[in-house]
Length: 123
Image (cartoon, rainbow, N blue to C red):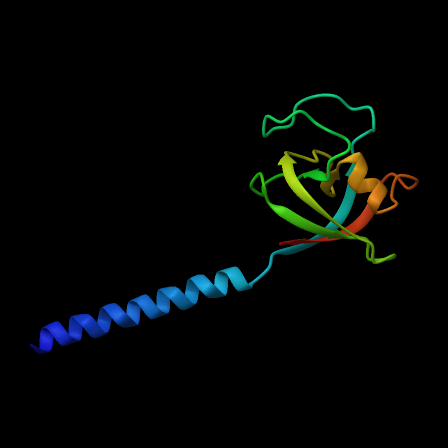
């Protein structure tokens, strides 16, 4: 009887620990900063996810985040924020962390600057 009670207690403890660990992982947000650029308004082509690039959509390219990841991208100077969805790979220029769609760049008012330092948080 003791072995059965011990096994049950161990199973419950493991389930609680695993449950807390999973909850904690979701509670933490991934954040990064760096320089972002944007796609030209007239760019045509397919993204790495297979979708046709649409300059009117709020999308972004990131080197490693899974396709479909939502990012809140902030201009730390103006505090403007835009939410984008990762649907492409890149940027492939050293020092850059995101390539934003033209619409996302317009929302951040960065089209006059070309590149801009941003902070991004996975939602």
